[in-house]
Amino acid sequence: MQGPAVTDWMSALGEIAGAAGTVAAVAVALLLARRGARRQRIEQADREAGQARLIIAELHRAEGRWWVRTTNHSTAPVFQVEILEVRHPDGVSTVEPAPGAPVELTKLPAGEVNDRALALGGDPATAVVVLRFLDAAGLRWHRAGTGQPQRVLDG
Image 1: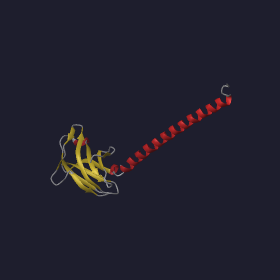
Image 2 (image 1 turned 180 degrees about the vertical axis):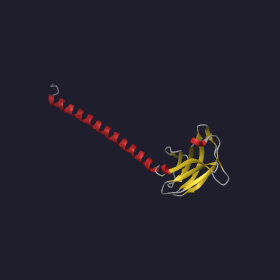
Image 3 (image 1 turned 45 degrees about the vertical axis):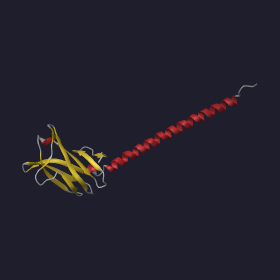
Image 4 (image 1 turned 120 degrees about the vertical axis):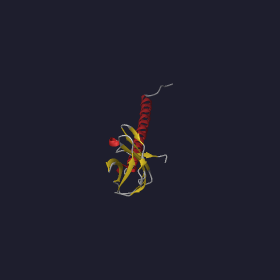
């Protein structure tokens, strides 16, 4: 009975090294695919938020009252633009429309500005306006001041 020859050992070591290389190649391929899918999701979310980043709401005082100026800097209309609240250092002001100035704006065309008078409590001088609106693609967004818009998925 004769033991394994050196060539048998070398052949076995070659097969083990080949198997290890194959496992490593598969692991790297899976990692790259996962990173690529993540990058695609981030890019898609960025594209979706493109119009939402161009909808701005600011407070200003004129004619003895507080006004919310909503500006659509995009090239498409937005819909159901609703002022949810006004946040300031004293807390949150409830938003009540002044007579003839609805809190929800049905449509804000591209490039348009809309001023809505509000009855606010507290000191809104350093306040942040919180909006919810529907973009031209039918996606609903929530935006506080100039912060990044957040997609609303539950309607």
